[in-house]
Amino acid sequence: MFAQVGIGTTTPNASSILDLTSSTQGLLTPRMTTVQRMAIVSPADGLMVYDTNLKSFFHYDTSLSTWDKLNSDANYGRIKFKRVKSTDVLATVLAAEKTAGGGSKYLLDTGTLYEINGTINVDFPIELNNAYLIGQDSSEDKLVKASGDLFVGTTGGSIRVVTLTATAGKVFNITGGGTQNLIFRDAIVASSSNVGVIDGFSLVFVSIVQYAANTTGIIYKDVSKLLINNAGWFGNNSGTYETLQGTFGLIQKGGGFTEVNGTSVGLDVSSNPTITGDALLEMVVFTGTNTTGYVKAYTVGSYTGFYFNDRWNVRSSGIPVEGDAVASGDVNFDYAVGSGASTTITGLNTPVKLAGATTSGALYRFADGGTDNKLIYKGTKRRYFRAAATFSFQSSVATAGVFIFYIAKNGVVISQSKVYCGVNSSDIDGGTILTKVDMSTNDYLEAWVSRFSGTGNVLTVSLNLVVN
Image 1 (cartoon, one colour):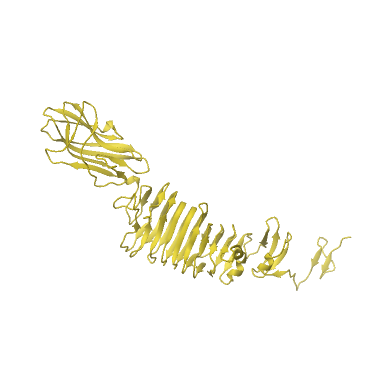
Image 2: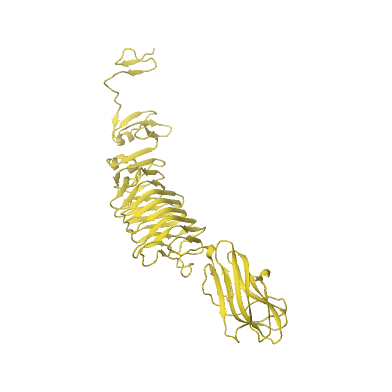
């Protein structure tokens, strides 16, 4: 026998087991706190309660083993969503996260979007745990930690459209273990003791972030892919703004500005970070009344008057252009007339390297390897160079002779570079070589000579070999 129960009606709907009818009263479900709800043992699929802390209905989903908040305008219909308001008691709203963090931090729920609404005074550190943390207005939606670090742990996540402040600690103190990703964009970091350390990440992407009135900047360490786009460092920051340490696969820092005053430093690479791929610093404006230099340079692998090693390409205002595209080098020697460096030539059409002690006035991504008359390309990218040499010489014998001068690459003369010169012993002749040469890393150029006719050796009075 089947029937329906009606309350407030004598004709319950045939499809219902219970029909409640009223125009003045409602249905009151069980009401409990978040802690009480979470303590229910083996909740049934579809079990529904009202959470008095979160002011929302929840039903239990056994397929996901989780309590789902009922869709409403308040949560935009999202399943994994939580809004944290300035009027909330944080330990209550994030009770589950605090429990997950062992009572010493808020361990966010993976994949959940946490919306920050207003200024939130954070009492325990936050571990992102690959959650999404977002505000709607970065000037109004803020996370403020009065003491200690704000973000900690070993996981990444996404932070957007908020202001972050750690008054007496680090904003970031995260070690990612090499596999985590961190996205930080459209945000502000202000009035913090230390922006912090981001260490051991697969990807760190920072975009459109303003830094203002921070005492100490940020350290990036051992990041496989570091992308910084349009970061703005104001002149009221102090200390070292950005420091690179350890090993990086690639670095790209583009756009934005770094305003550096006093003894502050905009970018510190003095620990000689290793770049296994490429590094690009482009279209960043370095400015300010800094007295020690905007960049603290590599101590190994950089060149006089420059900041970075051969892995970097740099094109930003306020600092020198660096890159393989502007690599250049020179070798030269200069002897008084009547003296010079003698090069022995053993036969006709047998090229040999010009002898003589040379010096270099300006080497950039070139080296001499401790060898005279040699320019070694140290850049990482293959490219074409213009090579030019000017020389003055005499013959060692009184009879006439014709000599051929060349530029040689890797010990082999470049045939199209040859220049013929004929002299007697009393003559001083000279010439100019111009050629174009394709060079890869560690290829080298030298000035060479051979005898085309006559006898005798070459006494080189001057030589200037330039590559750019």
